[in-house]
Image (cartoon, rainbow, N blue to C red; front, top):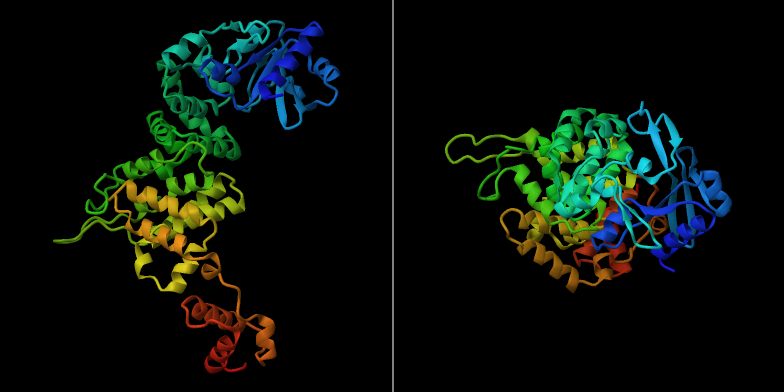
Length: 441
């Protein structure tokens, strides 16, 4: 049984019990567009208690809003009771939920017309009370009813409008667009976690460039990521960046991100040059050029601050910051000592560093020589050469008469350096190096 059959079965069970039941929302939109839905939702006039009676193993995770999760194996379907929402004091949750009797009442509380279609799984009839099918055909993102009211209810809907417009290559309807521009400053009412999650979707759904152009057009960008908005108009040395300013360069890199790419790679691409605006220095004197001294160090700290602001996990923050911190090191790979190069390619998730470098080059000078150099090195160098087993341990140093302490790290690092450079191949050579270089404490 696949996910659609599971959702259809839920509708069938509800209808057999005397209730109305329809597929609703994004799954109907995707079915009509010929796309495979990511998940399925069901709308019904059964109360949450009625749904739970029919599906005893269901989860009442959103029962206060009329939502029950029905699960089987690895599949989950949200079953929501027809409702009208009253008041949104916190800009996210309704103050009061009133159950409705008809599907038409239910869809009028939803966000956009293309997400408010219902499908009768028995007859395949589509119920459209808000003009969603016309907007699908026309390629338009239109808020249901009064746009300002829809965005007042949930400010994150402004970001979602941008997401859908970018993902489907649709236009945002004029009144909806105007309302977003007017209310953009209220996006701060959205929790950092929700904002982070939707921005990540913007970056990883295969339309990141269009999404960020729309964030800029709708005045949302300086509100959610002012550090990115400041990239606009920041010139770069034309000999290295013939494509234009930092904003243009970043957009070109975002354009290269495929759907389903790693979220940390996507954020690394977005933030890799975030340190350039605050470190910009115009050409000084004849023959001078634009400079961004220490932009990597500044950008790494800024990336960490942005990740903390958006409540990223420690692991994701560390990886995103590492992508920013190391993105310029590729220019030196042909001249690196073997030990330095091996340590470089041992960075955590190095494939993301390499892909960021490829996108960086492709979006600027187009020279991929260093990218290919690293790829050849990885292809030709066995993993046990890149990261060989240690020749000595702390226990070995203790047996040789060295007292435990900070010197251990210095000694073991020196042994590994010589090993990676090919100056040591066995334990005996390592011991001789230690004895000749370091005296016991």
